[in-house]
Structures are given as structure tokens and as C-alpha cells.
Image 1 (tube, one colour):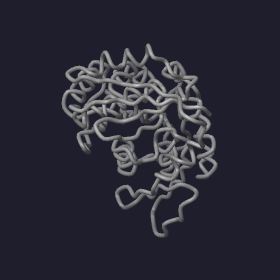
Image 2 (image 1 turned 135 degrees about the horizontal axis):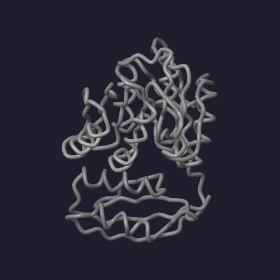
Image 3 (image 1 turned 45 degrees about the vertical axis):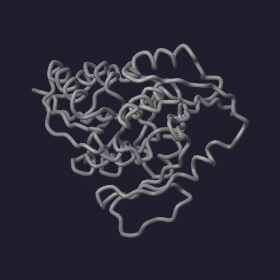
Image 4 (image 1 turned 60 degrees about the horizontal axis):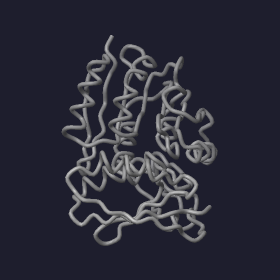
Length: 280
């Protein structure tokens, strides 16, 4: 597959601003990022490069700092092979070991998840994913029906299955992610996971005991009403992909208006995950 690189020169950018920009770029199809001195490079399949969409992201995300960028077509490479070189196993809460199929197992762990990376989000390395994994470890999933919204590799769905969930629907707008879930559920012997391509329209008419949504603030705000329709009274909602502080306050206000009660939060490097319960 031929890729294009977009190199951003952002000498005055703060780490949190760069994280927000990268998160927004991921939402329009950029799937690999690399730090380069006073900026970073973002990579996207050339067929998916949309300069207008890029300019729109910069218009809204780059407030307060100057961003310059250059676009370059890249030579054909085995991008998945290169990405795998930087994929290392992780341990979450001393209970869950996440590795690729080319890593050795770790005996004695309560849960092991095998993820074959395909340049889709959700390997557990990002703070938002690891916090969501931690929430799954802390809460009961035995016999539950679960939605994994914005599923990436399906890592959250897989742990929910290993924790006893009876059925899981994993939804993502990226067909690479849907294909990744299909492969990873076989690797982890979790046949109760089904995957679907789409967004909130894909869950209309469905019902779940638990919703897991690791996306970003704006999409979460947009989809909260649909989550409410899918959950019964006392149903649980776990969300991540946003920052502590203003982002959480905006989400809490919207969630309250939709009939949810805030229960708790986790914070790592200013990234935030939160637990809500649907009111009776």
C-alpha cells in the first residue's frame, strides 16, 4: 500500500496540544505517527489523503500555536512489519498481559490477550486503552452483553469476553479495524465477539448491559443519547479518549442531561477515563 506523510513543524506546541492534534488526525484516517525534533510526521494511505479535511482539523485544533506542514508521497514499504518492530508487550494492573503473537507468553498472568497489530488503534499502549482495560478488570462482566464502540483491534472486547461477557458487539468505522477484530478474536478464542462496520447507526435497536467507548470527546458527546437508548436502568457506561478537566466536565454535563450519573474517573498523563451508570 502506498502511503503519504504529512510532516508538521510545531516548535511551540505543548505535549497535550500535540496529543489532541494526533487524536484528531486519527479521526480522519492517519494511522501512524513519528516524533521528529520540533514536530512530528503523520502517515496516511495516499488514497485517503484529503487536504480539505486536514485543513479543517487544523482550523479547530491548532488554536494558539502556528502549525506548518509539508506533504510527501512515500515509497512502498511493509508498514505493518515496521510498526511491529515498535510493538512491545504490556502488563495492566499486574493481572492482564497484552502481547503480539510473535512475543513469548508470560506464565502466571490471570489474563493474556494476543493482538496482532495492523496499524489500527488499541494495543493497550495508549493511556486511554490501558485505563479502560483496568476498568474492565475492576468490574463484573459475567453474563453481560457488551458494546465495544470504536473498537480498534478489539482489545477491550477481548478482555470483556475473557471476564465472562456472554456476547460483545465491536463497532468501528474503519474496515481495517473490523478485519483486525475478526483475526484477534480467533487468536484469543473469544467467539462471542461479533464485529460491525459503522458508527452509532450500527447500534440502533440493540440493547447492552455495558457500553465501552474509547473514542474522543466530540464523538462521545454526539453518541451519548444513543448509548442511553441501548442501556437499561443501572446499565454501565465506560468512556475514554479525552482529557481530565474541561473535557470531562463537558462530558459529565452532557451525560447528566441524558440520564447518566457520574461514578468515578481514572487519570494517566492528563488523559481520562470515566464510569457512568444510567439512571432508573
